[in-house]
Length: 347
Ligand SMILES: Cc1cc2nc3c(=O)[nH]c(=O)nc-3n(C[C@H](O)[C@H](O)[C@H](O)COP(=O)(O)OP(=O)(O)OC[C@H]3O[C@@H](n4cnc5c(N)ncnc54)[C@H](O)[C@@H]3O)c2cc1C
Ligand code: FES
Image (cartoon, rainbow, N blue to C red; front, side, top):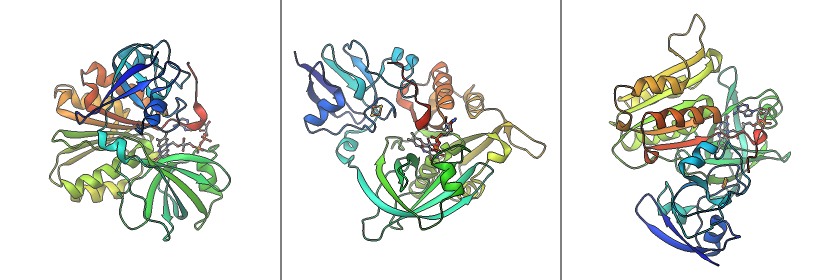
């Protein structure tokens, strides 16, 4: 028996596809010429997360709890790449239909142009793509997969906006045993070749009048910097709030970038916090999520559109905090820096 699946996008556009009981929704859409947003198609990255408004399924195929937690599934969220229908379905996606058509993945060759430590644990890396290819076009907040010549590849979010310069700027956390990050920090040298796959991801600025609140944990600041830089170009008078949290004082980076943004976005309020302060620290103490919770309490959480990015635990805590604060799903957009080597299956 073939089921009918209605797809609803956040610009009120609708589409309909058919789906076999042994077929997942992403594959069914592809078969019918629709490229829905997806990346790993194995239940790991969460790019295909969406809301099941109507219909039934017996069980999602195996997936990482970081991509979809049991609490999220309870709420009605599903991973389209892991979803096989057991009835007709109605599914809501939190991105516009235009992104379905525009989502065209490309490959670029490039080289490492600059590598510098900008705090005890974070490096700034600039990749320059080759002049023989068109510059990579992407939306602020998106990411690429960077593949090294030794075969290791990881996802990283661009911190700069897309332009003709061919420069892509990244902020990368260095893990002492990190296959990718420690290689770049210790062994790589400028000029070394890399391959970029993308752009990927739907963590992008929504075009509305609501005040954006950005909550960034560590290098989760990277895509937020790209969004703020775009905002400074398009709407310099906009009010915006950035809560930037780190574990230790030595982890904090981005001072120069945020200062420059402050000059271009005079209504940007930046609140920095660390969990473990030292005598020199003059900012807030606590997690970014706790500082955000305090900020919105008394103000009414629905005043803002939320963009949050960082490690899985921070995303989970922020989801819970906003849920309790009564902030609707349509106002929450996040990118989860799911580490490739911390996958855990619950399916
Ligand atoms: C969409 C997306 C965008 C991303 N963008 C960025 C970015 O802009 N900047 C950035 O720094 N990272 C980003 N990441 C994370 C990045 O892709 C890598 O997972 C991370 O850099 C670790 O890779 P590695 O090879 O250095 O470490 P691995 O060899 O994969 O892991 C080394 C060790 O570190 C641990 N580890 C890795 N990540 C974490 C973590 N988050 N929390 C706790 N322990 C961890 C692992 O368990 C392992 O023990 C992003 C991830 C995704 C999915
Ligand atoms: S595409 Fe990665 S979880 Fe579905």
